[in-house]
Image 1 (cartoon, rainbow, N blue to C red):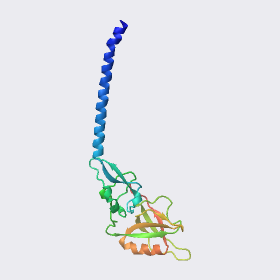
Image 2 (cartoon, rainbow, N blue to C red):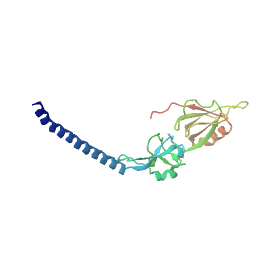
Image 3 (spheres, rainbow, N blue to C red):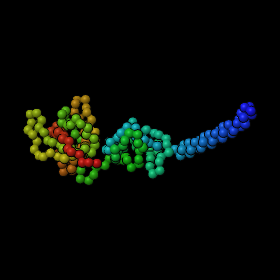
Image 4 (spheres, rainbow, N blue to C red):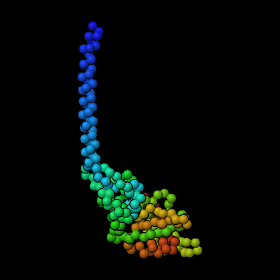
Length: 204
């Protein structure tokens, strides 16, 4: 009787294995179809390899090319535009790992009523804490050794670039100031008579 029972059960096990195999084939086919649909909708687009802050110039090293199917509603820039983007200015902060948007880059923008001034500051003339583009600062006139202190009040400004330390210890930084203060700031900067104070930042 034992042999008869085992013989009767064997077909049932075979049916279950066959059904499982058919299901696996169906799922595999579905996965392959989804993968094909995803790949067929993929496009070669530009992504951000290194963070670029607002008002900085975009270099070739800041960008990379990736292939993906962009989510609905997300604007991307095709890889063929890479050469057109290098040398443009970031109009917003571009975070590393993100996709480049057509609205995120362009020509430098200086609003009406303000000018941009480049400063070369001697060591100790600016805070050690990071001064990201868009940071509110105060430009304070200071005396150089052996000279009288310049007259006039401090000037409100906003940083327009990341500070770049030079081999001689000085720091280069671009700032945005009101148009009527631009000439005076440039003269003080040329004379080495400016120092930077970081102001409390407005909440984002």
